[in-house]
Amino acid sequence: VLDTGLPRNRFAGHSHGMLGHDHKPPLDILAEARRQLARYSAISLVNVRADKVSGGIDDFSVLTADGESLGARRLILS
Image (cartoon, rainbow, N blue to C red; front, side, top):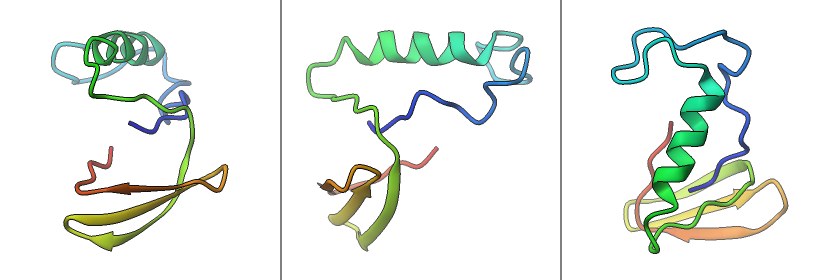
């Protein structure tokens, strides 16, 4: 999981209409997501921005802001 830790809604006072997280501050939601992901040894959380994605199903390449190229079979964008 690539994440800069700076969600687009970080300046909002609280979330709106997000099931299970309605009226929670955005950074609290991010912190909880990180805690939950930490339970899974197969998931790595990397503090970096994805700058470019190329390829296709089963063969994606992601270029990060620090110049590293990462490979993936699948992508989830959010």
